Image (cartoon, rainbow, N blue to C red):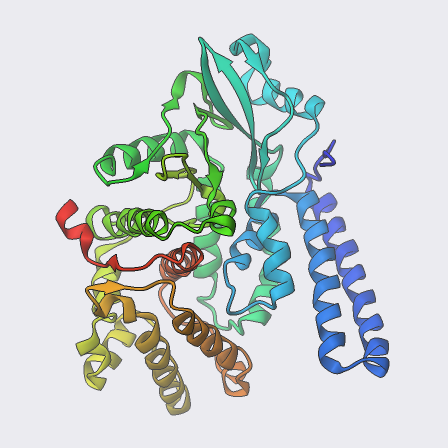
Length: 437
């Protein structure tokens, strides 16, 4: 894979890159209008989506950092984005052009004050894995194989300016209006800043590994503070294949069920017992060992769940609340989905929309066991998402609604559901976490 010798770090450099990417997208639309004259509208639209996805991703992968992280987050929204975008943006999860070896050594010296060869017995300057915020290298120390994650230059410093550039596009895409809309962007900015703090990630990683050590078929690497800093984190190198690679070839249903139960228990235990959750559930953050155990990685993005959000959120998932209109509407207000200044049209529309969504999405929680290989269930979710994404009424409504905590909690559940479906996990015990308390 081609390496990168430099990353745009200043606001002007990064803005220039986005502008040049925007120009390519504009040219694609010009080609699209001509394409419609000789091909069907559907063929023309598919080609436009493919070209735009490629050009946008190619621009973002040069920027890395929060810009690429946003693409990674969007790749998990399979029911919202066109397939071409999902496929291309999903590469941001664990397949990104790495920094060149000279830049790696320079970056290591800057962040750690020493070259890697002064710290480790051996160090491979060629990355074995590159993602949105950092890349991983293999090192050896005292006979132990280690994974050393190095953060890209300028990532932490460019978060605020990157999001400022993305904000107008996001507000238009999701029809966000109103003076308090900044709370959503501040939530994302705050979490991205946390993700660039590797000292915090080290602390969170050790806490979760200790708290969840008793969960069956789940493993964590050991972390080494001595060989870590604010921008570098060192851990055991864990042998295994990425979850997406495993699901692409697996035919062992028992192994899929075992992994699925471990994954589900891991998330339910965190959410309900710890009130803090690994909020970045994409395939690049999980490995499958040769013995069929799940290995959890990367705890930079952890979301604390306040009790005043946790209680109404999970009460709203209860079937008796969904089926009781008065109680249902009460919870929608409590979670800021409905607001006192909503028009009657907005009240009616969003009450109906969230009733449709929650009646479907919460089905696993109404059963003792659930079959996450059920293609019909996930097809219904996709169809519902597509229906509302095309809704003319929704586009007229103010999309600024819901607690800021929805961003990462909903992202967690969407990502978890997608992973469970990819595994084709069956007969999953939904409340198994209760016996783990």
